[in-house]
Length: 257
Ligand SMILES: C[S@@+](CC[C@H](N)C(=O)[O-])C[C@H]1O[C@@H](n2cnc3c(N)ncnc32)[C@H](O)[C@@H]1O
Image 1 (spheres, rainbow, N blue to C red):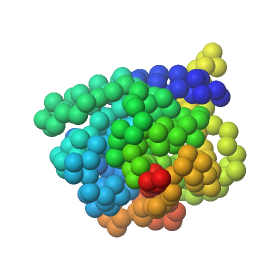
Image 2 (cartoon, rainbow, N blue to C red):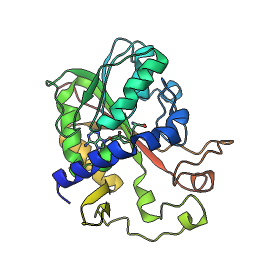
Image 3 (cartoon, helix red, strand yellow):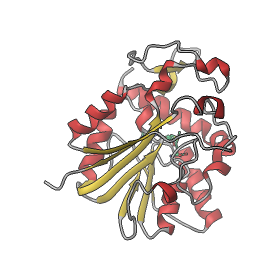
Image 4 (tube, protein in one colour):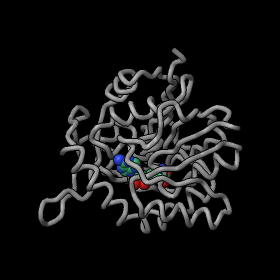
């Protein structure tokens, strides 16, 4: 799976799936809210980005950009970007509904159209990183566009979930795949053209990608499933969430020198 094949599949998938994704998850994500993961951890409670007031923030893989709109309401100068025009169309609709507008940029996270040292914070909730073949390049791009001292925070499916089937029920409690198998999960059409691609890296791979890009890792957050949270999101469910983590959130800093 080459980076360009992976990118083509992702763009096509998210363009086609944008309406269904928002119909299914839009209410949970809110119009101007920063939800890190299906466990429901909110930036308003977690403060993983620090004080965002007056900070210039880039959200990559923003989808409908509810996180960027929340950041705007907190006084940040937020910009939202995504590979998919279909997802960005929902970002426009979200701006109309909420009355909070953010500049939108259609861009691949592996080639950000911004000058070096433009942002104080780069972030994403499940955007881009799990879908790109060359995620080390996303780390380097985040590092490039950040100012020294800037923060990069991203959530992804917890790598240990790769071991299990995408099943929110009992079937998703049995280990069937190797954690060490980095081959992408690929769906194809009738002509064997990839239509959906998801990439797997181990926790160690992710940390090495960050360090190689020049970051210092500050935290690795594994949100616990909260009591009383009954909502299932795809393979995320109370049953599985009580036993093992579904999300990993990496928080890293670009050193000042
Ligand atoms: C699971 S959705 C998450 C969207 C949003 N952050 C949220 O929390 O709902 C993944 C997003 O990543 C975007 N994406 C996938 N590959 C990308 C890439 N190479 N560059 C930028 N965005 C990408 C998709 O278009 C999609 O909007």
